[in-house]
Length: 330
Ligand SMILES: [Zn+2]
Image 1: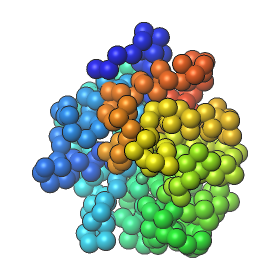
Image 2: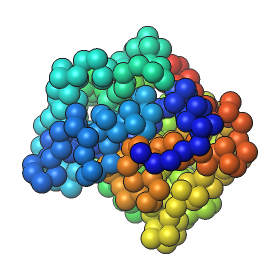
Image 3: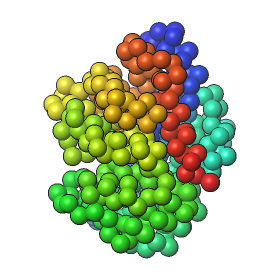
Image 4: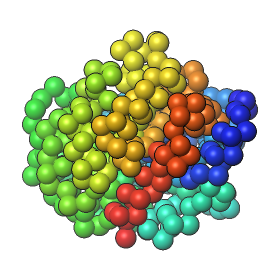
């Protein structure tokens, strides 16, 4: 375990910590040597159930990201396998892992109880262009949906598609159905026109589960100050992420300090009620100080050192995400 000072440990492990994004389920379904049993502590990758606990993470959004094989395999099957990996883990460790599907489920998540998961889709490829399957995935527990990953799909264009098209009619239907079903919409991978459309069409708050500030690191996956203000004005949150390429223009120099700089900037632009954290564990190259779940309290220590009040830190660690999900879940 890394060394943290007593004030950090007291605040961190008595606060609700809610992380907006990880790709860890991909490792549960991967073939060897990438495969990991998430009940067992590993030195490989970033997260497993033991390291979620060591890092004091109480609520984790688990994305179903079909990965690099998305164009070749069946994305619906890829998403279903990842969902089943979560359920399988929960069956094996019912006292350690719980699923959040309703506002009541979320209300039961505490700093000291089992880890609570929220299931998400990263890109709607798994829907196969059909709104019917959105209802199916909702029945299967999905409560967070990013409309795209980086390229274009049936709903919208991703941040790296190199286009300026907004949501398709299907994309608008997905937003409306998510609003009706109580599924959070996640704008993190959308291009600028897509973010604008979601902010215009969604009747409920939305989140950016793993994005940083374009003002500090000019990457198309990061958000402009106008987008940051737009998400905040809608009542949502922007979750700062550990992705080195989104932290620093030279990813090799990215550090915990850069993450704290992005959090500072988000707080200045959006206000402290609209800032959160989304690691992207197991989906990115994080800086060395944040490259494993048990290092998570380093953020709390860094924010304390920068003079943030315990109340503000609790909001950023989890209370803001909790508030927004309580508004959207039924
Ligand atoms: Zn992502």
